[in-house]
Amino acid sequence: MSKRLVAYFSASGVTARAARELADAVNADLYEIKPSVAYTPADLDWNDKKSRSTVEMTDPSSRPALADHDAMISQYDTILLGFPVWWYTAPS
Image (cartoon, rainbow, N blue to C red; front, top):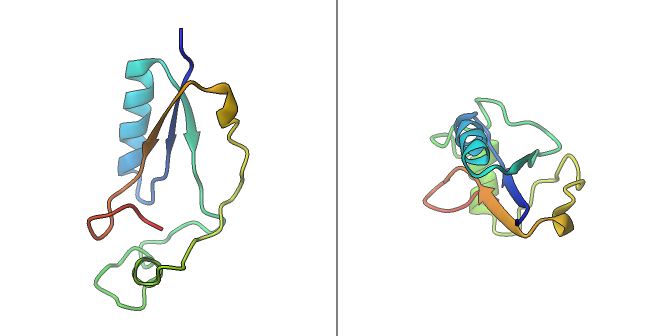
């Protein structure tokens, strides 16, 4: 039997709920990918050209720091990756 992992990033909680449901449905472990600095509602205001998410998405070199790098991915046969869609693409 293959070992599965659902790894996800969720800024507002929507993707987190979907990831939990998917992990339950496919009998997978769950791992949250967290930024070192959590996003605030102001950070996620895509109408504000100076908001954190807008700046990150318009700067191709932007790669927000992660809170940890502890996912033991080598022990999994299948990894399902979940993330919100920002500006029709994966967030930085």
